[in-house]
Amino acid sequence: MDLKKRLDTIIQKDKETNPKYLIDVIKSDFFYMISNYFEVNFEDIHLDIQPCANSYEISINCLGDRMKLAKTLPE
Amino acid sequence: MGRAIVMTSGKGGVGKTTVTANLGMHLASRNYRVCLVDMDIGLNNLDVVMNMEDRVVYTMLDVIEKKCRLKEALIQDDYYPLLYLLSSGGLNRNLTIQLSEIKAVVNELHTMFDFILIDCPAGIDAGFKRAISCADEALVVTTPHLSSIRDADKVITILSTFNITNKRFVINRARGDLIQDKLMFDVHDIGKTLNIEFGGVIPEDDNVITNTSDKIKNNKIALNRAFDILCENILTGKKKLFDCTYKYRGLLGSIKRLLKRSV
Image (tube, rainbow over all chains, first blue to last red):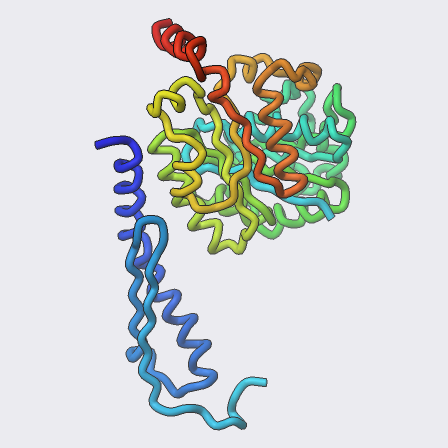
């Protein structure tokens, strides 16, 4: 295996293992932000991070119960 | 307000301390007030690289413990009056240091200097986090080797979580002959992997051992030209590249490459 391929493989493997602990942190940040606008359960947020060649593909799927009323929105 | 730049790498032995010392000398030679801060508490070597080990009376830990004032702990360089060193030490005392205490020292340095270059310890434990917490910018020093690039990538991820937005990488100990023969990673390979701004390339050069303050103006030394370019990139935000393969191109270059490897 040439050097470049080896480096790519190593970095990608690292990226596959590192995001796991990040998911909960990001989910909690996202929950804090989205709950300003929607009534949401923490369990209804699905976050997935897939490592690509030199980046991450981040997908957030969230189910909101209902939109918050205008008066309750943050200023 | 000065710019606090942390020199980090993750992996040990890549040349963080050497880059810190040389960059400090080059910035000071351009009339910037520079303070080198050794945050490698317990395993401090910046004083040795700067040839100041005999002049250390007080250290950063003494400042924190209020045994002396900050100005008393700063050691002025003999050759560049604008270059100072704040050494650390005291292996048995580092456990008691609070991050807020170190930050207070660095904040005071902000008002006195244009550049605060923080020499970060290797690894990603408490010492590393303490060092990066005090900085606004980071220079990630790496060598063109797999292990070093891998660690640099991990460090860059951590730096992002510490809100350090201005991150640049510096390739240290690049060998033009090996890069030309595609046996070593070049800037583009490393840049693509690390995905942060380019800072500079420092060639592997024997002069790094003997380079002292009075010699850094000698532009015949490739190392000095490389550090000059790194300085300019830091000052102006440019991405100028020092080409370490120029000596090894063409027919004469291929002979040099053969000779270098056979020795």
